[in-house]
Image 1 (cartoon, rainbow, N blue to C red):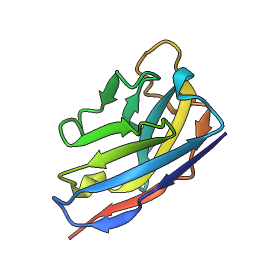
Image 2: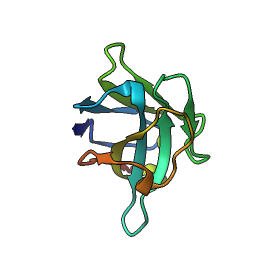
Image 3: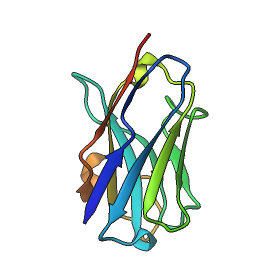
Image 4: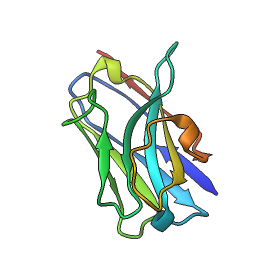
Length: 125
């Protein structure tokens, strides 16, 4: 199983950025995909997650209305479109996969079995 995050960047407040997570070695049909972020000196927090069917999505209050999670038609890449970026969105963003045959919102890192290496997003003027 491999998850490869990409799309790191340095952007200004208000800008948009899309990061991607290429997944191989597991089926989206039975896994939930989550995006987490970790700011310097802070714990890793859940940002968004997507159900195995793609029909259920969760967003944390801090990103709701600005971020959108989606996946491509081939079902091997999950995207996080980030609009209206703020300095507090700065951090390393990780994608993760966990058991997801039955949909439930998974917010804890311990609920995910596989992790990507992380991609750095910096929002600064």
